Each structure stands twice: as structure tokens, then as C-alpha cells.
Image (cartoon, rainbow, N blue to C red; front, top):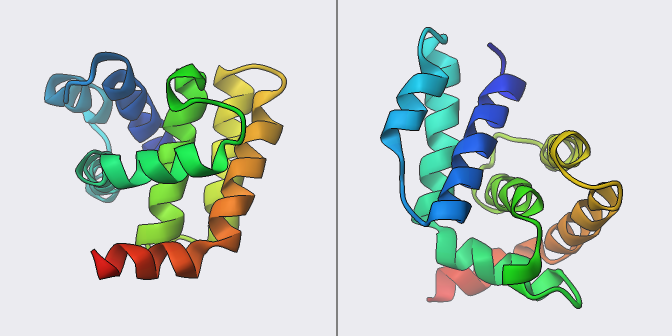
Amino acid sequence: MSRKSARENAFRLVYEYVETNERNDFSKSILCDGEAPDDVAFTERLYDGVLENFAYLKEIVERYSKDFAFDRIYKTDLAALLIASFEILLCDDVPEKVSVNEAIELSKIYSTDKSPSFVNGVLASVIANREALIHARADH
């Protein structure tokens, strides 16, 4: 497995969480079964990170998804946006460009034809406001 596959596993888990509002470690164990320890760790880091920071990430996605209420965003797009926002704002070792490209690829595979541009636009706003978002979070 690679980081790309690990990210896709995290995407599936976050999607399930968005749909059910419940953490599912059983699904995680199935998705990660037989994978390299580094890849399992990356999947867990993304999944756990999104869930632990869900309220913060939700607020960010809501803020920058112009004209779309959070509950009306396609769940697949939402999962991709939550993971990429987590990486951009809270993971110093993942390049922003990689986060954006991977989120766009996931939306191309799992969502609508308009989703990649939507995801790209939201994430461009997150990147443009990254420093302010990090400082505002630190002030809480």
C-alpha cells in the first residue's frame, strides 16, 4: 500500500463517519488488514485526526463552501474536504499540493463531474487563509 491507498482508506472511513456519525473501528481493521505498518499508521492518523478535530474542520468547510450548507454537500466531497483540510491545517509533513491533488482525485472517482472544481475551490480558500485559521484555532 502507499500513502495514496492509505488516504483512500481514511476517505472511506471518514465517509462512513459522515454518513453514520459513529466511529467504526471494525471497518478500519478490515480496510487495514494486511497493510504495511506505516500505511496503517497514516490511515489511522488521518481518520483519528479528522474525528478529533471534526467540529473545527466542519466550521472551516462550511465557511469556504460558498452557497452550500454543510448538510447539502455531497458526503463524498465532504470526506475528501475534511481529510485535505486536516492535512493542510494540522499536518506539517504533507505538502498542500499533495493534499489538494489527492482530494480532487477522490472526488473525480467517487463524486460528480462538478465536484473536483468545488473541492479545489474550497481548498484554495483554506490554503489562502491557512495562517489566520491556524492562529484563530490556537487562540481558543
